[in-house]
Amino acid sequence: MMLLKMENISKYFFDNKVLDHINFQVKAGEVHALIGRNGAGKSTLINVASGLFKQDSGEIKVNDQKVNFQSTQDAQKHGIAVIHQSPNLVPNMSVAENIFLGSHPRILKFFVNFSKMRKDARKILSKLGASINPNEKVMNIPYRQHYLISIAKAIFHKSKILIMDEPTANLTEPERDHLFRLIKEYKNEGIGIVFITHKLNEIHEICDKVTILRDGKWVATHPVNEITVKEMTNLMVGYNLTHYYPPVIKQTGKELLRVENLTKKQSLASVNFSLFEGEILGIAGLVGSGKDELAKIVFGQEKKDSGRMFWRNKEIDFKHPIQAVHNRFGYVNEDRLASGLFMNMSVASNLSIASLEKLTHLNFINSHSEADQTIDKVIDLNIKLDHINQNIRYLSGGNQQKVMLGRWMMRDSDLYILDEPTMGVDIGSRSEIYLKIHELAQEGKGVVIISSDTTELLGLCNRILVMNRGRIVGNLINENVTEEDINLLMNGRGISH
Ligand SMILES: Nc1ncnc2c1ncn2[C@@H]1O[C@H](COP(=O)(O)OP(=O)(O)OP(=O)(O)O)[C@@H](O)[C@H]1O
Image (cartoon, rainbow, N blue to C red; front, side, top):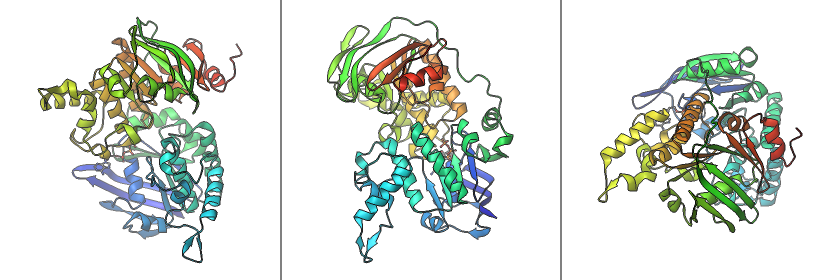
């Protein structure tokens, strides 16, 4: 018996055929990966499965019975739960209240049993290995952890089909291990799981089957032990992707940025480093190592306690990010969906927002020039959209990420601080972004890449700083450096060779 069967599903957004006769099915006790490039239609397909969108044609069956969902609540009643890429939690409610929203434990039918709610929430969160206080308001919880709260919510509602849209994009390694253990438990209980990911290495670890979509069309479904990561990649992109990383840069120029004794209570302890023209400098470190705070301080988004910074040997002391922007610094924030993008604005405005003063002439925006430059960036970064005036909220997650990078390229920044630049970006687009970053460096720009993906840092950077507990504990020229070296340093241990 199939838990979920989607047959010939098609879906249009206006004239745009986003899903074209897709077949997809999930058995009880199966973890089924759904993969494809940014904009391939993965989220749309699961939004149809969960009653958020209505398909234009095709049928959905749950336990071999035809269903016709009118809403997400309707799908939930049939046991389908979705954990979305950017969870929609209620910010001024507590974590526990968010987890139990709509089904609070009650005393005498009417009164919410808060103490039971908190106890249950703590139990579920600890199962996920998440150290989150259930009493804390969601608005005070780092955005990175919102996904964990959403998972806790889905677990509580005991679904038969659990759909996870990029569950590991924001998780640390221990959190990911907890999640995988939980997925295995669920599998044994006969729950069917749909697992969307851009981290193709995870598929062999946790999934049984994989379905690949391309441009809204079904391309293939295979048991995972019959397909390699390379084959999956080629099916996703539709060609043989051979050059993933550009060559590592060997020569750099003059000093661009110098950071001296940068200190901030509880996050940075006397950090010193320089960045040179044409350099791609990586920063590795676990959550809490200080790498994200370092980026925020350099960009003027957070205040330092002490220390000095120099740009081309001239002291800088930004009190506000706008000063950094004037100095031609660009910053792609790891929290892009929470604070980087303007969700009610068009793609064109999101791309041009950092360049407004450049594009403005006598106080009116030169819209021809804006449109021309925007189109250039869109072509450059291969952003998938219908029209540049389209609202950004309708772009797929990975394409929104590319807009963030395009914004600073359009501004023609001299320094690019990119915090998790390829989070949620498909493998084909990642290789295109790496090429762009390499081109920026070749033009003499300075690039700082903060990434939790050590392989990415080793593939792209000529030098890697490793941070641990607010300090730089390694400054490694990328020659004969291994992932293990970086992992040892990140965890506060020395390299043995
Ligand atoms: N509400 C909407 N209105 C108009 N177009 C939309 C809407 N939602 C999605 N789209 C378009 O549908 C296409 C598929 O998007 P979808 O979000 O399903 O892609 P995806 O495979 O999940 O990508 P990603 O890996 O980037 O998350 C994209 O071109 C997107 O712009």
